Length: 196
Image (cartoon, rainbow, N blue to C red):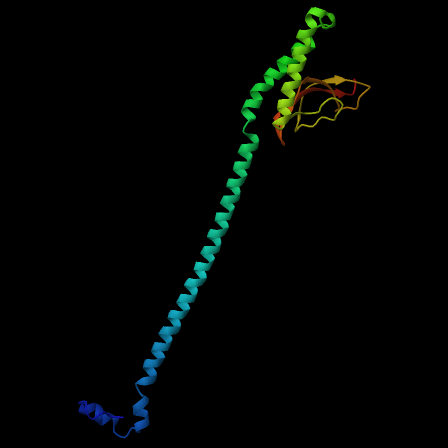
């Protein structure tokens, strides 16, 4: 199709003489459409890749946010549960001294009418202190008669014994304490061993 309204180069016209008109109509169109179609496909593919990358980044960001939230919740729960740890360790020495004081009272003073009230008061103080410990999740570690557990007990000495299995705790020098599921202080103990 030759448009007569537009001036054509004579050389171009000469070249096109003899070419059927149907070829002249579609000669320019397919190249242009194919190029546009290729550009559109390429742009569409690029957008698909960008969308997929964005989806992955969003999933990773959501997962990371969830992990951070879980860690924060655990940290807050631990802080609540174990906030009194330092204070409890300090108060344990008070509890130890109170126990030693009660153990040091001779039987004669316990029977003395003048001292009976004082002894009863000291024992009541010890019971109250243990009650407060228990209300805050602080409990004494069981020791005497049990096998040595290095996670809860610290062996200070070995005592030869025929009456006990080797490795059994037969003496407690200092009480051990737990706060919830964590060791606050190990029990210092004496452990049975086979006699020489």
